[in-house]
Amino acid sequence: MEQFENIRIGPKYAIRLSDLADWHRLQATCFRCRHTTVIDPAIFKKQYTGDTRLLEIEEKLRCQQCGNRYGNNLSVGRLPRG
Ligand SMILES: [Zn+2]
Image (cartoon, rainbow, N blue to C red):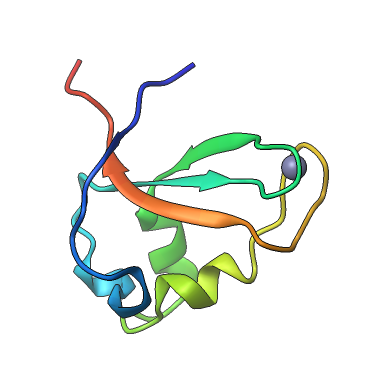
């Protein structure tokens, strides 16, 4: 499993896609089954405008493992340099 290092870049409700650099990664955690996946924010930048808040994207996440759409969490971080 990939190591993921959380970074605090501010209160989550205030974070927008435009605040994320290319090297940032988002880790999505399923509320129901705790499945985690690391996502390149560039994927979201293609779908949403830069002023979209992470909280809005969280609401649209769907777990790839169990299909849960509720209470899923996004955290900001990076992968260790390899
Ligand atoms: Zn799940």
